[in-house]
Length: 588
Image: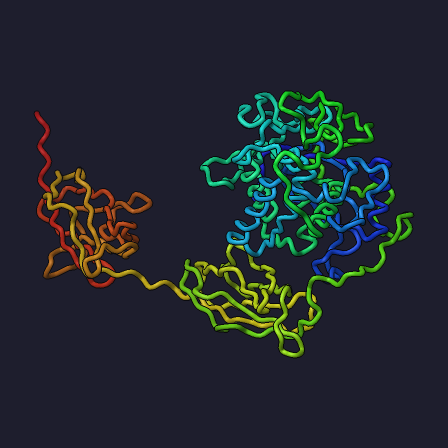
């Protein structure tokens, strides 16, 4: 991932008595994000919180986040609301499952856009919803206009080093209204300097506005997918969330809402969504300059003693914190010896079908492309069970193996795809690099015993463009004095069957005559890269318009008529006369 502007932030694991009780209860009841993921067998993958944070600034600038946890039931299940007693922001399960219409639409459109531009990331819109819930309460309950822009700004605390990180102004106050320090902005709480790198236009209006939920959702999706992450892999998912905010509690809270939303949601009108406890937003309001009490929104002073928001942040001269986040008080949920209940085995089967017993190739097993182009076909396999029936929803991992610079779309070497209803899974588009040769693409059924399938991919060199004719752009006579240079540029066009042709190699040589085309050792000359006279140039090539403008031609002390021969790949030849006259004698 490209390094971002801004200071590395440090957060401790803020834990209130309510949150601790909630975490314990969530763990005991197999709450989302703790015991097991529905992504299949995770025995070989990292648990939540074990992934190191990325080496760049977290996205939200240290603004306060909500520790409210979701209800422990499936949304909309009649008679099943069992919200934790005393949980902040408690309310009906059905209400919590409601997401404002424009906000929900923005999340789903961001998922669809990433499915096309970076299919190997496997970004689920529910992850954006979980982050949006924690960062801003779904844009303050969907308080957005018809275009998806927040009616009033959602701003995080002033990042002036007083309880939060010190990030001096990077946008001239354009986004956050503060020309002295930065503040996180919008429904997904981007620092202005981070937005400068990751901002996207999600609603097609030609602008990148962090206050617009469509733009912010697409930007957040690209951020989460960066660095070749596959979010269907638990370790990649954890790393992406920690990159958003390097805090164990933040990770656990987002994962809880992520799993909750995957169980079911429904659309509610804009402006009617459930607000979290506190001020009802992920940051301070438009008129708040960091003087909020600290509940829910951003605040100017955080002594580290506030149980509602006990972020431990560095002083301005502190070194960046690169340590792994500290788990919440009481130990990691489910860890023996911590006093926290150990999760019971899952009662629901993993989403990866257990019946996948074989992968078969669909289409060609041998693929080819020329350097710098897309492969016409992508690797494709079909997952079937022991009876030969297609298996839907199986995870298939595609990997590029061997010495090659070819990559899948998104410049990644591996991607995990899900099989469709017909049991097939197609790899992302395969893009050939500049290195020729053969490499292997391997398809593996994730977590299954099925034998892998391999595809042979070959990258061939592009054919060298050729020309059957060379012609000057003008017929102006080329003349110069001895000991000087030709003032006029010499430009020619290479064509093939009457069509201008790009990238045609051309050689320019000063020759003795058309009948005896030996290299000349006197008369006009060029300068090489080291400034030395040469009368032959070989590293010439026509541009995208099929044109070539020769370097400056200089003259020595020989006068007369000389011949320059241009030879193009394909056999085209053009001879050009160069006339050199004696320089005028200096006046006595």
